[in-house]
Image (cartoon, rainbow, N blue to C red):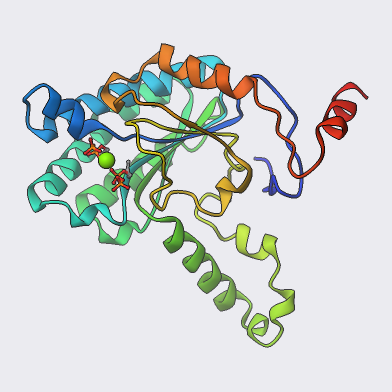
Length: 256
Ligand code: IPE
Ligand code: IPE
Ligand code: MG
């Protein structure tokens, strides 16, 4: 497994295919409402879009795919919708892990998982263990995840492990924090996609998105497919990632 490097420190090599794609899967409710269906019908269709996107990313050589499935703020939704989302999560874990295994995909789930019911936590643990040896692509599901929670728990964990940092805060460096983030096993996202038309981060990966290329599309998540993914990747391929440097420096580094 690769060691963690901050893309703000180590500049990733340019490539047409992003190594890490992170997606806010938004628009399920509006997809359903537009069809006069209950919102939860949109979530059910959203699971199919997840299946297709996982497969499409793996085929294109994406190494890490991270999907925002449930935010720490989504508990504010009506109790009924929350419980349908939990049931969908459970049934997806029960049904899809065999396919992930066949396709060589490692599954990780990040977020404050202690809030979930025991059955769900057990399925997560089992699925992660079963797929732990797979190396083709790492699929991360962010569930009860919040970027602020992640930064806070990283600081707390670092201070517990190294109490002397409290007396020497100048030793508390970026890597100290980064290595305790929930997704410390992955490089920072190269491409961020948000479906559903909103242009905001909604407390997703706050630390890691510092230099990620952002892509917003009006496509509702249940309609997101390989063609929509390709449009996002095409857009990504046209970007010049400068990480603070000038365009001339970037061009010189690429040709030299
Ligand atoms: C995203 O779709 C799924 C979750 C947040 C769980 P939404 O449910 O937010 O759909 P809209 O934004 O209401 O259309
Ligand atoms: C973000 O979508 C969270 C997920 C997709 C899981 P929301 O629909 O919850 O975001 P807001 O409330 O519109 O910002
Ligand atoms: Mg939404």
